[in-house]
Length: 445
Image (cartoon, rainbow, N blue to C red):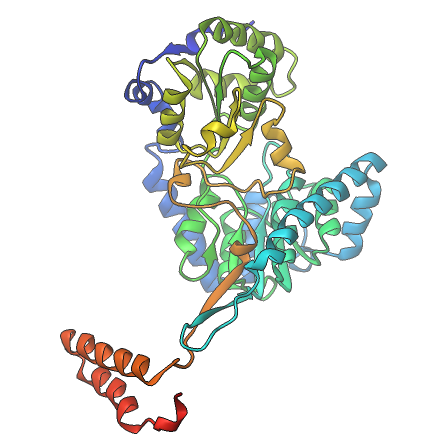
């Protein structure tokens, strides 16, 4: 039995806690950084220069793909077959999740995020959906049809007309669960390709895979670095790091639930982070025992154990107030508030990708079918970035139209000319002043 007592710590202040938690801030940063960046850059360059030739070569070399170039695209019929091959309860679950995600983001759209009208003299904004979006669905140690739902459904609600899906195939092809999810979302263009070469193909375009306007979806370190390097040629949602959960609990929380939620995050990946900050030592010790009991029967036990022993923490602090301060320092991807009256603390939280209020709200609900997208900022980036939403798939164009009075025109003209001359741009000043000289007075009330 694995002994998790070594993961139990005590901290009196947020500063002390940050020192204890320092390993989680270093995840994914290692001595291979320069080598990784160079390798990614090399693959991107090959795809940009050689197009489909390099795409097929890397698909075979890195993905284990066995087909020809024409076989990279998955037919809509094949996706429909994958959906039909799943047990009926799984098909219903996919549709259930899709409907809830669609309903949640559709409600946001109806509140006015899809467009803003211009008013004379005030300006305004035009909001338009992106034309073509690429959805990256990782492979590796597990299949993630939920990633398809949490990106493609949101893009559809936002009004995106064309969605390109990619996922590493391997010798056996893309798993049925992922293809079924694409089918449920109505995505027609899906390609059996993953990794850096898939990101490059969507960023630059090849004869087989079209260039997209934006790439969304998580991936490994290579995929994250590829997204970082292609940004500018194409937009991206974020540079995602290892997944993470931070749980704040008081003595009202249940140890079995706390342990279960930590394990749920840890089983993702050996770099995943599960942090529990609580105010009661007796509860903390009960969680340690619950972790040891629960993990022994977990199918992904080795992954979860390594994650918890490296990046799992149970931290006892003096109060929920201190726990909230620590949370804002970490800026977690997922934040659970398993405390009495969780709404009381919500106003103090500045940095979190998603907040789960109350003990009954398992982070797993957010992963699958509660509604908001589970593609969230990681590695502390919740300090400055946001989850995937319909706004992720739109762009805004500023509108400038008309003046409400002659006085407003004169004020704008004169102040624009003054600022232009301050910057040494006389042409700008003259352009503004020309409007005042030539305007017809009858155009204004």
